[in-house]
Length: 130
Image (cartoon, rainbow, N blue to C red; front, top):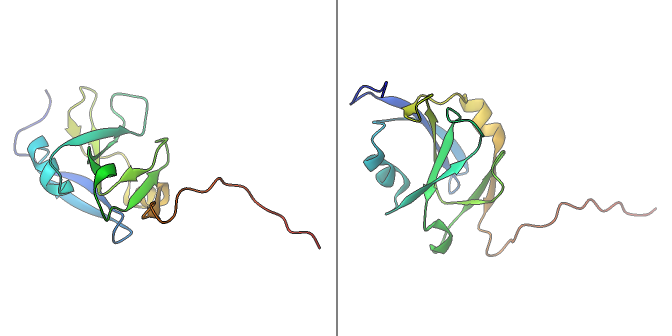
């Protein structure tokens, strides 16, 4: 691969509890993803169609944890549970700096809160009469 070991890379931590996106640095070591996300197993939420598009790592068991908050990200069909780690990938599928800038991640992220009390509502605009 074209990746040097021990290289520090940029990533974005999507935090639905504080409702903010933070730029962080990480080791690009997959073993650190669990620590960053505070989870045992993680899964990839794809937000693009190409191998070198940015991806978001999320807690694989996030939907089943109590006290969970959710976010939606433009380009991914389902709400995502817990923290999200947005990272870049290169043409070989290795980790790289994200293509997104912070402002882009912020504008594509929609914080949904705790969906237990507030299930996603259909987006119907009601126009009152008179």
